[in-house]
Length: 91
Image (cartoon, rainbow, N blue to C red; front, side):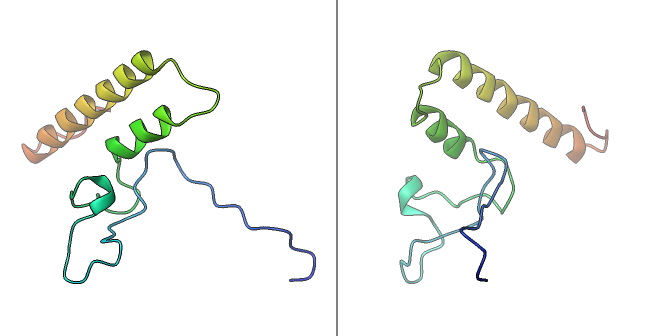
């Protein structure tokens, strides 16, 4: 495209890009994230969210943001447990 300068990909910060094994043959884990299995694409990825916070420029007040992320993780966990018991969403 002659008039195109760049593509811009926008996504929710902290959303997973999907699983990746960084080219390690036969591996199902991601060595960049400590050997964990990456969450499915678009699923909340708390390690990635915290990494974005720690690398932000200008810097965030990390304690407050980390606490908010921890609260969000706990709410998501409670919601999953509730759904697994057939009680619907807490949202």
